[in-house]
Image 1 (spheres, rainbow, N blue to C red):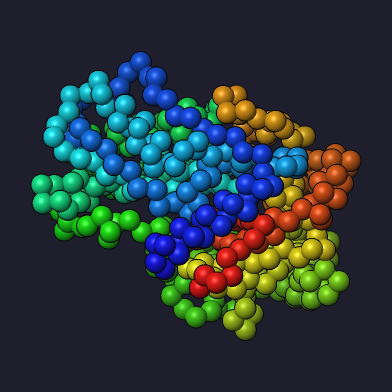
Image 2 (cartoon, one colour):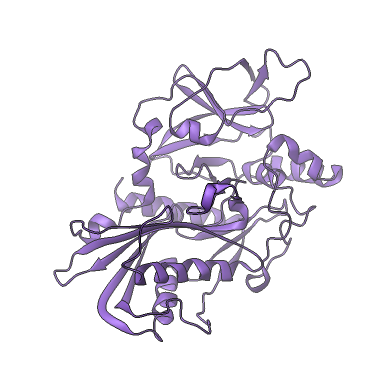
Length: 393
């Protein structure tokens, strides 16, 4: 996809959301007592490219309140982050170089997603990305020939223990620490690149969506038939055998998945399933909708007969009844309270909500229009909006 097309999609998405969202803004101000890196750095200038999926959003508050609250940067993220990083290196002994930061992810996910923290021993502790800032970025060293030479790749999560801004600052400070440790060894979090050819800015400045074609399921015309218990199974195009049966319910345009041999036993419904080249994605409990290829990923539409995606995700996270989100957050006191375990399965969400709260969300969700959705192929998150650019292929 051409960069101009990506930009038009992002502008359309942001314009659509702005009309129906309560926008709160992040203002990054460097006020640390200690510099983020203890030693000298090779650079005195920082450049930032923002090639994230949605260059405006940092976090959406999904507590079932209307209008939904969206947290985003007050100015273009690349400019605000560049100012922060430039300020952070002022007290540090600097060299004459330029550090380029190409952001691929810097956000809190919409969906409850559990991952092991990269680089952590044994990977036993799992982090819910609804309570962490996820950072993925590529760093480059600009040389005298005007080319940018790959320095390292960073992928890490930063738990949100109170306000969101300190977790964002932790992620950005980590970029500077990693860039300053040029002799460090690579691990699951920091992959240092010893020797690589220089690249132009145009070669680097490509939206993260362009890289999704590398995943096995995107390398084929359609996914293999079978069930995908987890998103990773779908991304790797590795379905499993199953005893599920799907039937179409015309009144609300959804597919109902049932197990042939359940007989009262607990059923874990799969993330999705494929049949004869068609993909079906789970929405809630045993309800599925058809998805189609779209702009390096898959998209789907939530039918009008059921609550929209914002409402379903509010139910998934338990809404505000268990203290996960503040109903009216402001930038300086936006918190993510509650147990880190979250609500992992949509079918369990009804237990976390009172009947009146659940009914209120469902009723409002039928009228709400956040129904155009697509998959973040890096994480399995769902990005949703009220409109979708139909002309982008």
